[in-house]
Length: 263
Image (spheres, helix red, strand yellow):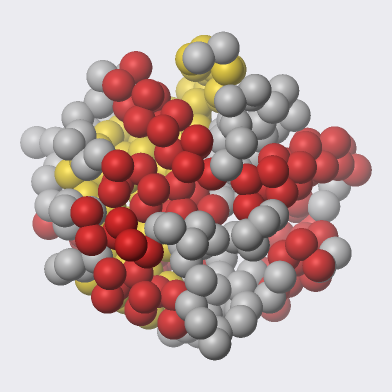
């Protein structure tokens, strides 16, 4: 396993931890509510093919809440600034869950520096008549179990994540999530009408048994983003990266290879 290099990027008065590893074309991975979790094996595999950059979202990890952070689209604009600050081009942007929502908001604003976009179980849309689990009404353990189809992997995640040592960080993360996604619940009613502006090759990956955002959400993204590719991962829940990491990594790397990679 590669050892990532972690360092703070100070931008707009905000310190954000970046974990970096690998070489090649840049792959910017925007994670979901697990954004302060440890470096995980599936990220190590991505770093074998790409210069992988994994930020900790503003306001996560126990860092102060930025005064400019009022809604999730603020994070999208912030990551456009991060791409500029790091002088990145040809970026493969991958977002999971909350990070997928951020990635979609970013891409419809500006895709000039993107080579591809991958959305994995992305939040952000409301599909009429389709209701998922409300994460704000669940205990931490229930919330983790809701994300998995494989109960064994759910048990492993609970044992790893729900540690007394990380309690303060988890609380800070929950506050940050509530700030940007509490009302309206985990979606932006204006997002759907701008998804047609995403012009880069887009892959949409969804767990067959996603209880938070059922596959109808993936189909809604697919129908709104012209030319996008939809992959439904069988026997998989919302946390595709943890439930079916091999399938996710293979899908991401096949797509980035098809749409440009460093020689």
